[in-house]
Amino acid sequence: MPATALPVISQATTEEVDPRDRIAYWEEYNRTALVGLSCTSYSDRGLLARQTNYEFDGLRLADISGNAHAIERSPQVARSTPKDSVFASLLLEGDAVFMHEHGCLSAAAGDLVLYDTRRPYLFGFSGTMRQFLVDIPRELFEQECLAGGVPAPMLFGRDTAREGELVTTLRSVLHAMVHPAAGERGEEGGGARRDVLALIRMLGWERSGGGPRPAAHQAQLLVAKDHIERHLHDPRLDPAQVAGVLGVSVRHLGRIFEPTGTTPSRYITERRLQRAREQLVSGAAAGATIADVAYRWGFSSQAHFARLFRARFGCTPTEARARARA
Image 1: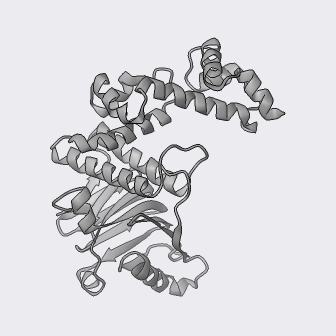
Image 2: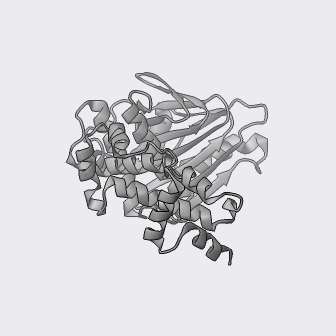
Image 3: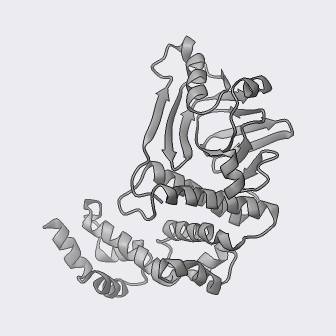
């Protein structure tokens, strides 16, 4: 996950536009910034929408929010404004329907819809919505993700627990690209592109039943690290739990972590110590005791936490807090 925010290509909002002109404004902006489409508003207030477009190493990421509306890429629009991409649309808020020539998909927050922009579709949102949309050139998608492309739109997120973890990790990666936090792990540029494509490739392989191939280790490592980060507070978190999420053995999980130069157990301990230290030296933890911080980050006892902390940082938790205050 990147440590610095991606560069913004363009931004647009309809909020400052005359309500009578909002639809035309939104259609024209998307035609030049993302994809040709027609738009329909279902709100008495008219279309209220925002979009920010980012670029990362040949891919584009759009952060789109709005009220109830529908966007359509009809056969006529597809012919008049050609676009040769695969879109990966991750719904963050709201509910939606995705209609295409082969049927209709119902999406909820947390679901990912994968579709080819050369084919007609209608994406309708019943209320307040927000999505991350990754624009992947089709040729690159077929090289890096699915060799046959996307013959029909695909919905991910609900079929299996492992699929859900992959989509959740993709959301974490994209969120970190837009809103990086201090100390966040990961890489920029090509690293972000590699992570996104690896996760989408893994989703495609999970759905096809082909099972993960050796190149899937990158996606598995991302999922493992993301699961660990979201469960650091759980004292039951251990390599066996993480391996179970991935559907692999603990030994195989160790092989997944080998390129990082550490073991799953050491990685969990390191992340817990780092997060505990961040809390101790920040003003937000002023009212918390050392024991509170230890238990907050999954340590079984204050004494155990203090020993590990001193070995890692060369001072006790109390000394680290005192230095930060001084």
